[in-house]
Length: 283
Image (tube, rainbow, N blue to C red; front, top):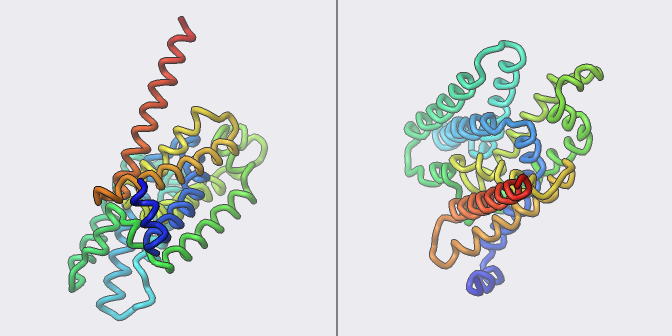
């Protein structure tokens, strides 16, 4: 731990990693609370894995056709938003089986990404690293992009907090009150998509679902209101990310995977303690 603290003061890449972790934690805590409350984790998973298609396409256009301005993360944003809109439209209008639609988007998005990567000349290790994340390789450009996405997410949540809360807790009552549930459900999916793009940088595509849900799930054991749950989830996200960086630095372990293991272990311990207390109270 002392080695990590000393290194933070010396190396800018660790300072960038810490800043990215804090910025990601804000979106993770806020949107993750909605995701856990509304129980749409599976949708987050579908969106998360579809972003590889956008990344692969952007990388291909950048390398093969000289579109140097098209960073893979911009492709990820576009792909995530498209996936969110498709899932929202299908669930609200087409009445198809949601698990089938999400599974299709999940698989097709990753397949498209792999196809574009295979057609791009050169060594594609950097792009494939998005599968598992590499928070230690972030750049100032990544920080600015994530900061902008954070501002967008917070602004939308502040403007439409009560509407999003109604959609998450009691959809039927919201309809009775005249709320356009379809629109705000789509807004929630778009917020989820933007948060997925942010978390891809921290823990990678494969582990986005865990980081999106575990901090909020742990926070749910200690809080009652939605606002307090968001704050607690954001704080926990920061702590998990810091712990992941600190414990992975010395042994040279993947920071994203270490973060998820710590978050998962915390959730397991809290769940067991809560279950034991509930059993004792019934006795």
